[in-house]
Length: 411
Image 1 (spheres, rainbow, N blue to C red):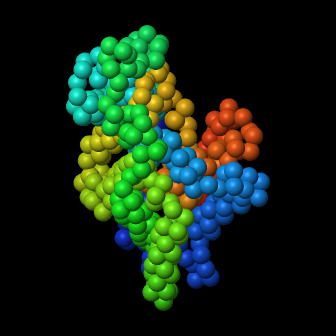
Image 2: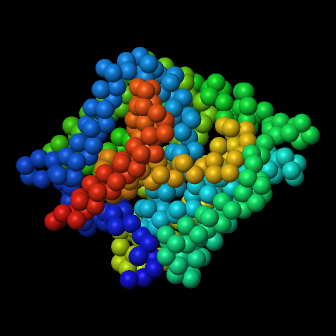
Image 3: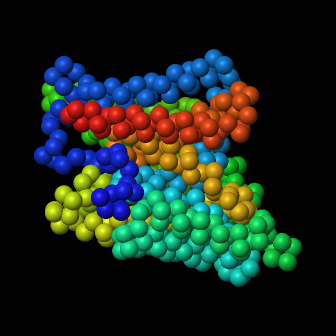
């Protein structure tokens, strides 16, 4: 077994199977829905049951549109990290350094502005480039030197975390009277990181409609019914889309979108489009499904794996920038608590509208559901210190269920 194989997830990762492997009734048997589809529905039902319990238990103290929107906005760095993790998993790779890279990105975003006096626009670009370089280092270690992905990214994660501690001397780094505050558009009241600074309503409605349309397309293609039911299914999905957008408008959801929510949804749309409709995305799924077969098909597996780590490092740096925007400062290990929920969200995608495979929308949906589950318990009186325990339990359960789906006969 190669080092890459040893450090790769055991779950199959091709979101879209090859055309020759998909029948017109994929996801359906001659008697009805498949076991995988029923599993996906069961997962959604389980979360629905939890939220129904919250409705009875917590009532208005939890189900408030402003509060629910704030939870998503506050968790934006976690969602961004989950996207980075999910893309790596789609390509048969693990990256355990994303949290340390995000912490380093936070320090770079704050430190280069305060200490070097660079314009914040330049700081953001340089931070993303440093994140890409960190990912490149991971990629070279894994693909060129054949270091196990777990060991390589665990080691570089410690390296990046160590640099931040050395730079900060273990203290919080933030604006001082001599340096002046961070730019008002970047952090503070009325900034991108301020939940009270709402995005224009037109932008929020457009993003909402695009997200709903993408979700319906993903659902339709993931579980295509037999030809006799196609028109009915498409009509139903179209009506569902209109109803969902209308309900979001009636509830005032777009009006609660701040720029953080717009950023994470736009990033999700972009990554989903690239993964689903471009040659690069198809190559990633091919490598994730079977690296040897992908190599025989002419795909440069090492280059794809290298690009995965570069992408992961760049997006992790973006998560660090968002943390800096929200908090206005940088602290050692500030992004460390985001690693476990990021992986939990990514693995949740394998049992949400999926046949045991990683995908982007399931990652975001699972991450948001996880945020609501933990926040609901906190609202109900459970100490916040139990959050990591909940995330760990969800990760174990989803990995076990996903592995079961892949190992059963006929999977």
